[in-house]
Image: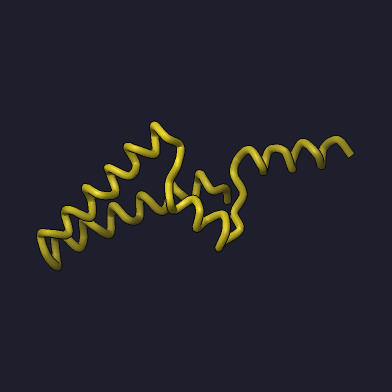
Length: 77
């Protein structure tokens, strides 16, 4: 799995989690949903998301570009 796909899956999970927490725990968890949306919005302009650092350094996931270059290098052999 690439960093980009992991980020999309993580963001979707966090949005769903925040909606459930808002519904069943406390209405102020709505601000968690707002934070996630704002983070996704800024990521669309800057290309940077803090969660990607976690995916890269802790989980060792590679970006789509890195995976494509690995595939190209293996096909050239």
